[in-house]
Image (cartoon, rainbow, N blue to C red; front, side, top):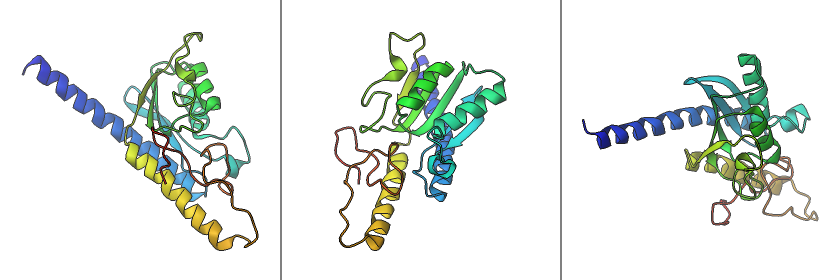
Length: 204
């Protein structure tokens, strides 16, 4: 076996592993969806094993801090017995917001693998890249686009169903809410469309 063949096989294996863990993050997002929450989920992996899972519960918990990433970070820290998540990787279905990106830097996590980006509010490169600020004492490796279509369509379909539901129940004289809204910074009752693609075109 040549060196190039070995390298190609390693890339394929690495891609399959990333997809496997992202599917677990999608499963967590479905739990949020079952609660009528915006479907965002994540898992944290250490030494090839999932040590923590999290999904969006902000409206359910009535807690601003109850984002998928923060819920998983708390569980991982408890599992490891240390606030430092060095050697760990987070797989998350949607690009982290400013709050979660800051927490990830503070946790000293090694890498964040992102399903789809969020140009309206993402802070891992879309609006600002808080994960790789040179002025901070820790930078996080970013991999994006793993199972992008699955992660993106899950959000798009959620908000499409929400629009249909609101259309059926809306007061005829009520002014409709804007078509574009950030998936993280609105409640399901307010949201319309979760994100856009990299070019800025609406996903829905």
